[in-house]
Length: 233
Ligand code: 0O2
Image (spheres, rainbow, N blue to C red):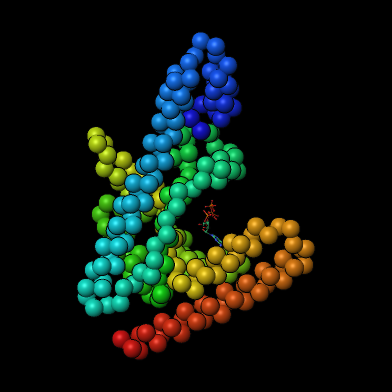
């Protein structure tokens, strides 16, 4: 994934250097390290974006709890998309393999998942987050109002956040997923099923139906819990 080089070119340059009798081991290691630098820097931008976004949500959580409202956030999980998943998506989208194109076309290299107890808190947090003047909303997908056919529910926000580096301010894209505990429980179970390709098709279909029914039931639970809380408040 080196800048402006395909994987194959990078690998073949690496093999040439490994076989170069004039190159010492130290020189070889140094050359590999310098090749890796743009890639390390690339991933570091996304780690910084995650830090920025996580902090924004933690600050909001702190503020709501100071106001005497229950902490709206149960937990936050973040991840950087793995190299393998990035390359898989690059091939699927048919985009060039260089870092600049990957940065331009992939929106979910940095992923932040904010899990709340109550559905209303998801929208409250999303509104507060999006009102911040350094956040640019690129895309909003409300799979709570419009669940996916399999039952998947979450609010997805594709945003751009600036990170402040030594000599530059750099906009970085990230995907924020907001969901309730019930939606998260469901999504992690469904995610496991996706990798169970070795089961017979009838079993897979029956499990998908069961999961769809679970999604409807847990959405009804979310709604009930929400109205109980509203009454308590
Ligand atoms: P991971 O491992 O979580 O990163 P795309 O973003 O191009 O892949 P799409 O449909 O435009 O596809 O994006 P969408 O619908 O916003 O979904 C992106 C992410 O949402 C997924 O990332 C999942 O994390 C989650 N997601 C979406 N649909 C489902 C679903 O049906 N079940 C579960 N469990 N999760 C879902 P990745 O890259 O697929 O996975």
